[in-house]
Length: 187
Ligand code: AMP
Image 1 (cartoon, protein in one colour):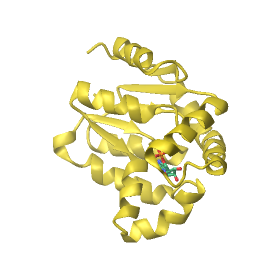
Image 2: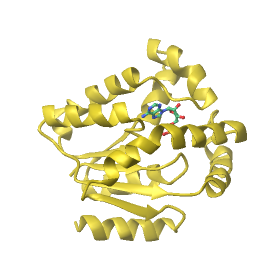
Image 3: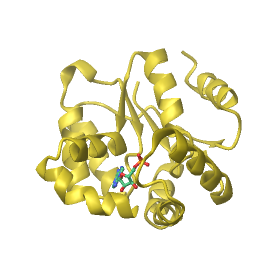
């Protein structure tokens, strides 16, 4: 089963992804984590993206699509992906469709965790204290949310027509969201 978790930064995608990975014996594809690893390892990709990431800007589709292509081509992980933070642009969504088709796979569920800006700001300020991420300061949080709204809205329009698209209230308690997801996937 392949699942997309979709929503603004701080919506709780990572938390639900980790839960689903355990439950379904799947693999989390977090492009944010993949990109942070490139920076930590100081790779050529890492050097290219560090400033944009610190500024809360999106990394280019080409870079992100390449990372996804490499991850999807692993036969041991086939049909066991939990996408967290990808796709985030229409070009990425279309690329994912092509890559999945090429690998004989499909998306089974798309969960949109919808949360308002004020809740996101509160949550990310909290996360800043716990995880010490350099892109979690107030100005960057606001920029990341606004970028998400502009760039990711077309992705929402693209997916919301699908029968397997479900909108969930991302401001609810973690356990409530888990229960709702469980109910939809019925595994
Ligand atoms: P996240 O950990 O998902 O909040 O992502 C942190 C940062 O990584 C974002 O603000 C972007 O700079 C970058 N990023 C993560 N995923 C993507 C993506 N799919 N497309 C472009 N940039 C991304």
